[in-house]
Image 1 (cartoon, rainbow, N blue to C red):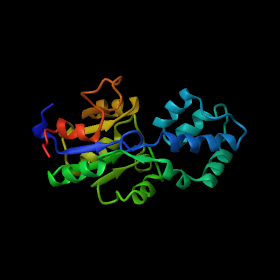
Image 2 (cartoon, one colour):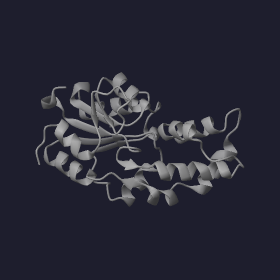
Image 3 (cartoon, rainbow, N blue to C red):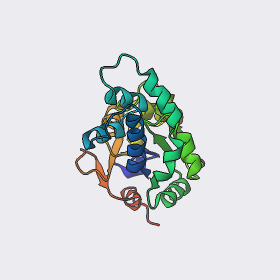
Length: 210
């Protein structure tokens, strides 16, 4: 990895910017409970954690030709009340501030849809990213590379000028297909270019001393 060429740092949301495990589990457990289904198993949780809401509902309610009732229930439940269960990663604000001061483009590529705007607002992060691309902004969400390609097109970036930080197989596959570098966040089992366990480590990868 030629650090001198890196111009943009792109983050996944869930599992990277935030620990959203508790919030997402509570959300989907309530959706399942409204239809008399048991709580998420650990395997189900790992899968829905990577998926868009639409993909997750199709996965959790297999065999149903029509999911209108489920989506109606989901809309009634809403995600806003679960946002307080999210935990922002330690050192994130400091990292984002340093990246800006050093001239890096900061972006988000997430399979969240209409909840991302509220999350950024509630945690005061609206001004910390030059671009946010959600599953609602593209035709094909991750693992398709479309979100990363959209960011690269907007800022006229070469794939090797971009680092994508994620925590899932979907993130890895999106990065590989887009041709960007991939940093695995707290997930050493992923076949990444670099592994990090904290936001502070990303400064080290970029050879920034602060």
